[in-house]
Length: 481
Ligand code: PNW
Image 1 (cartoon, protein in one colour):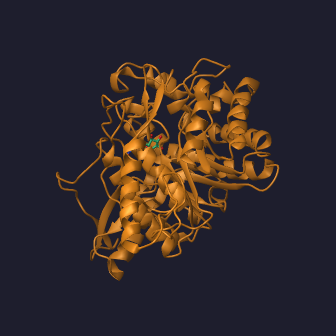
Image 2 (spheres, helix red, strand yellow; image 1 turned 45 degrees about the vertical axis):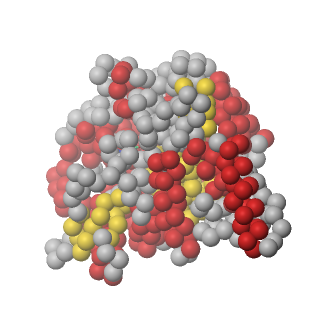
Image 3 (tube, protein in one colour; image 1 turned 135 degrees about the vertical axis):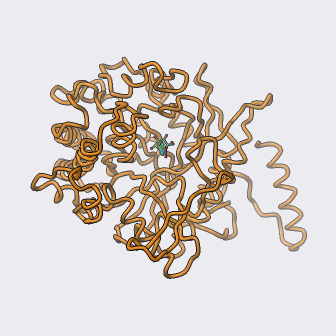
């Protein structure tokens, strides 16, 4: 875009300056403008991008990595779009320096990435694999050399295949805690921000109850609820293990796709309805973490299928956090009604707009209400937006450009609502755009592109999309542009 837009921008700036009778502002793309911009973020706000190990790394059989349940699942016929796997993905295992250059060019201060547990412990526990740790040491050192702060997710769904019973076993949260302790011991000299887990529903319910994600099981409610419990127990034990083993001060939280409820009308009763819905509909996950217990309404609902909880579990699960990370994509709309619950979730009409992924309903207010509901209910110390972004049918034009204006539209509108939360004083400290790169989109394989850099999966060539140029400006001006 550079040449043409720069010229056009120069023309517009000249015209504006002539009108104002002032001299030309010394400003071109990539520099901070000399005047305040509306919708500015706090000075220390962290702009970043997010990725996850299995979605970008490839190198599935390299450096002593053991298989994860996603290797098994994606290699099982019929489980992913087109039989796609993460064997090669973006080949970031080899191209990580190039990816750091992309981050550097954007000007981000933070990079949210995940560690593949089975690179570190190929069997899930027992003997660590030094080559796996070396890889992450190289990535982290490269980030730090470029003044980019790593924010590390310890578990983004790629559970070591070798762990018997996976998340059905109560041993798995304990194996996870040992792995978390190991990472804290070896990385916390340079890494100070950790997220225990990513999106409980996706690795518990979608994997073990619906079967659309690894390991592809369809367990009955009682067993599936136990899987949920082991997921949040892993988080709790992980928080304790990271704190106990860290070399210095660390910030510990998680990345959770809590359901977001937008009041249809902004008045007291509907706002209260959205808050109630947030608490009830997230009961087995975020609510349990924030309150250190399962809400009665969840236990009553589940009856005999309620999870079996051992003494000490809920205390670990309720460990205080330094931040709550929210992955925010689509909202549900609610209104108050006269029922005992006090709210009703509205149905969506068939014409409700969505992005390229069929589940991704457009709703920019999600970024405001997602933050506000969580803060009003539980007053966390800080909020990070650990993911936000969208899929689009990106194509390379003959000139080699990707004109993803719908992604710019999506991000600009969502960020406008995030700015509202910031302006009202909610403690939002960071925003990580999903994603730096097009990548392996789980069951959708390579058919859904979320990157702000286009990846040609045949050559691994990365090309910045229009949205990358736009995001670079957001970061440079620290404002919605
Ligand atoms: C998140 N849904 O996943 C994950 O954290 C990322 O790994 C993923 O690539 C990104 O969002 C985009 O999908 C989700 O069906 C996957 O509602 C599916 C859903 C939500 C989030």
